[in-house]
Image (cartoon, rainbow, N blue to C red; front, side, top):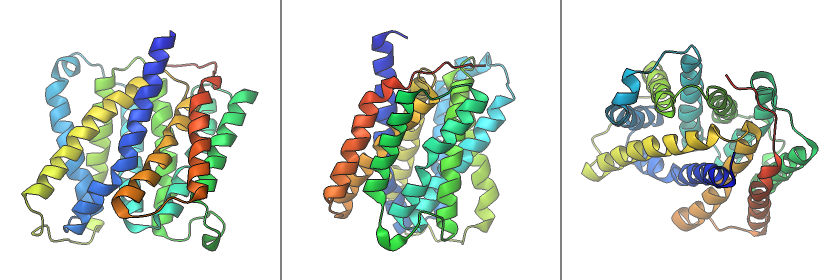
Length: 292
């Protein structure tokens, strides 16, 4: 891969991390207006699906089915709906810590599915990024980082699905970004329909036109960022990508400070600096990859 293409790929993942570090806020606005997390996820990804089908129709007409697509859909559904539910209903800091154990699952999955194996420098970068995450998110009063309630288990499972989704997207380089994006959206919609009956009924009468516009905007942003992120995932080793995604923690810490009044302390700045450093040096995570 030429230097410019690699730079663009890294920038695309950083863009995705930035969006996901901010997206908690509009979802919380929608929840405060009366719409549950499953329903909000279903509607926003339905918007992404509809606009995606319209925008990608030329590519989709000639696309060939692959059995990897249902796997991507299932992983994406678990990741995205799980993430939203965990953030809305759990202790945010603890949920994020459990979700961002995903580099560990990525190491295991990429070894099995992609034949990517960490070199010594790569292992150091992973360790640096995880250490930064722990420093940022660790709260002694919360005890050992093990799920203590349903929201935390959902966060842990969502992180596993996140790792699996990224590895599968990396593996299926022969499939178009457009086709895999539609698979991602379909997975969230499908799981959302399955889970809807189990979500407590909520009144959406409190939603005004501005709230519905927020839902539509989230869907369009999800469509764009999904394509952008997949561009990066198809061009970088999975282990390198998962390190870059940790940049979301930095964005989330800053956005919660600005939007929710949660002040950043010394440990947030130190941990964030370690994650940024790991992202900068993530180019050392060069692997031998087998794709299919």
